[in-house]
Amino acid sequence: MSPWLIAGLGNPGARYASTRHNIGFMVVDALVRTCGASAMHEGPGGLYGLCTLGSHVLHLCKPMTYMNHSGEAVAAGLLELGEEAQLLVVHDDLDLGVGRLRFRKRGSHGGHRGIANIMDHLGHGDFARLKLGIGRPPGTPVTDFVLEPFTEQEWPVIRETLERAVRAIDYAVNYGLDAAMNRFNLPPPPSED
Image 1 (cartoon, one colour):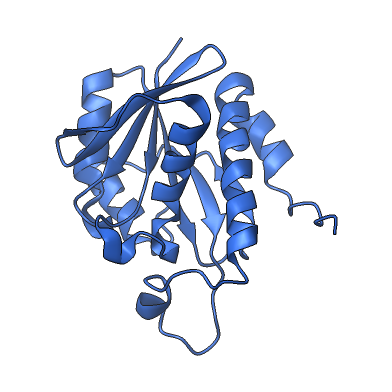
Image 2: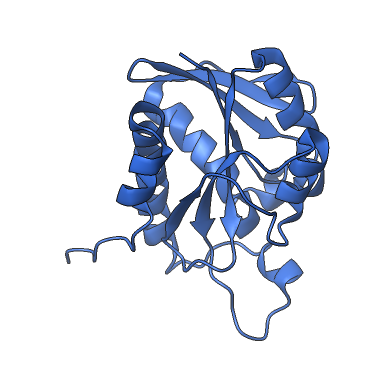
């Protein structure tokens, strides 16, 4: 069984903790809470830990080199796990509405600098991604928007999205990416109020 490296992207430090760009970090933190992961420890360029979902041991990574240099930690994590390792990068996506999830098996960086840097370090874009929607507001510069915290109104949706992301990752590692894409790449069901 091939090991999985789940790399959640974000920026280190309290200043960025609740910002839109850090939703990848938030997913790793949700995995840690859900599956009783080992304490995250420092390693090359990032924080690393282990958690178990079903019969799979997941290797977790939070790059601490800031978003635009995420590739250093991801490449180091893969090197330690060997050639058979499967990579899933979890990151924010401006083109998905808040609350949407989308798995991709591979692809371009689509303008996301963290993904671009990982591709530079690995020499290819042949790795899976789980994108979490943060929306794209009209009239606000992207660089400002991604570094803003979610609004008070968005937080209930974000908390539910993080829980769904953990379920999606669990499903992907146990049933495969194609099955996960078919199940989770749909709009979330309407909330029952």
